[in-house]
Amino acid sequence: MAMAPVVKLVLGSIAFATFWILAVFPSVPFLPIGRTAGSLFGAMLMVIFQVITPDQAYAAIDLPILGLLFGTMVVSIYLERADMFKYLGTLLSWRSRGAKDLLCRVCLVSAVSSALFTNDTCCVVLTEFVLKIARQKNLPPHPFLLALATSANIGSSATPIGNPQNLVIAVQSKISFWEFLRGVFPAMIVGITVNAVMLLAMYWRLLSDHKEEEEIEVSEGVVAVQEEDVMSHRFSPATLPHLSSFRSEETSVRTDPETLRNRGASSGESSASRDHQADAESQGESYPTVNSNALLFQTKRWRRVLWKSSVYLITLGMLISLLMGLNMSWTAITAALALVVLDFKDARPSLEKVSYSLLIFFCGMFITVDGFNKTGIPTALWDLMEPYANIGEAKGTAVLAVVILVLSNVASNVPTVLLLGARVAASAAAGEEEKKAWLLLAWVSTVAGNLTLLGSAANLIVCEQARRAVSHGYTLTFTKHLKFGLPSTLIVTAIGLYLIK
Image 1: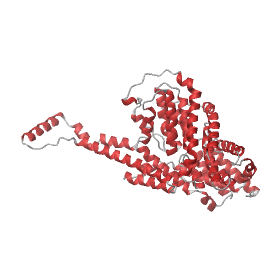
Image 2: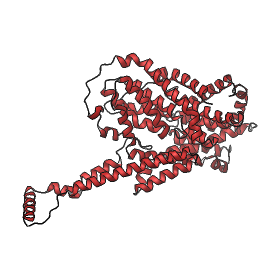
Image 3: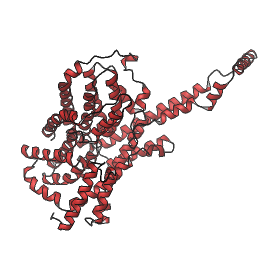
Image 4: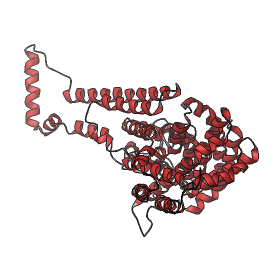
């Protein structure tokens, strides 16, 4: 692609630079409008500067990606309401055998849940719970927070629904869910194992020297964390911690008018009722012995169990459909709407939790990146680098990996994928080599998020959630993250380059 005229090139570069600054530094002093508004601002500049036409801007928005993102968010919201993430939190502490066992569990649970429910969801859900367990056991928090964030990023690389950049790659490359999983899964398993071993090696003495506080024994050895503590910090994409609808359902049972009337009855009424029952029995009349309130509560409880089971089955059906190669966007949307219908109530409270700001951010980013591509700058830079980035050679693969690592931490991983994806695939030979190029891009751009604290949204979520935690807050510093993130990222990335075929 030839370079655009100088005016168009300069104005397009200004628009993209504005987008980049506001995306990487959302609270920049001269324009603190945030990432979402920043992406729309960059898109608007592309149109106003006539780098692209309005019709081209609309065409640049990738609806299949937005549909897949929306569907997976709705499914995650209903899974949250069905207590899935509460069970994941409980799994961390169930029969835990010390600090090192807990660290390995955090790595495993974080990786698996991130592959199925996205890394950001996993980090929002589990951060405060991991921090709470560490505080209760008198353990240093930062090894566990690092385990959570880094494992979430590595685990999310295994599936197209694990993170936003994988969604983009899966839709643009048309690689099926099963092929994606089969291609990256071995590298993810080995990467998670190596990441956990590195954490244990780096913090072995710190985890061994701690003085454990006496633990309160709970049934079957579960750590003494109140169930409501887990439920009150569950995932909501748009608003972070909130009380679940189940809590409100339980409250409605506890405050049922019939119950209140029974509780407010005088002792005289109770004795009169007992006398009436005795008279009825003496006359041979039957008298109900089942408490209506208890029956009502039991009925609601079994309805709840049935509803939760149905949510899990629909989610499982969605995953099976994705593995069968059905259209990913419409599969996710169908599962989301099936859950809405199954709920059989106004869906507005649940749909309000969808992160529409993220969807809008993607719209603006699609337009901005497309406009920047039309300046010809990305193509010119790739033409200079392409001879040295041949994925058919070990040296070329290493060069490409370094470029992706740097760009993912400088420009963020999703814009990097949008800028490089088609070019990396086009430079590879057709067939298996092209698929390998897409999978390498997914692997490196995802693992690159572990390099620094600012490398991925998952890292920032863990840091912010830990800092805001009431009574047991902790600040994960940039230096502490970099100390582990740098060697872990380089080693785990290299493992993937070798294993992904």
